[in-house]
Image 1 (cartoon, rainbow, N blue to C red):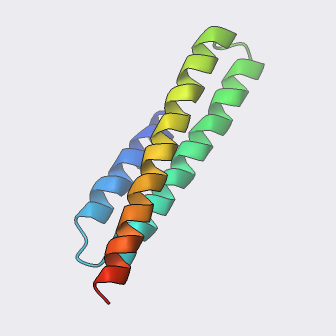
Image 2 (tube, rainbow, N blue to C red):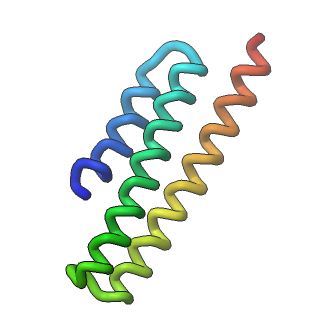
Length: 85
């Protein structure tokens, strides 16, 4: 879970450092994949009773917010890419 969460932010940072919009978009997509991976790991933690339902619900909601924000950023990057063609 630690690796998935760190991968999400690492990919955003790496994509931001790229010079081309398409590369940045690709790294953001990888970040989104890491967030979905984290959601899956949260499900497993709940099933194994490592965490309680309230904690699970709180973290899942925060992950979903991060995904929505990331989707908005990807949409923004696509628009910028189209405007520069």
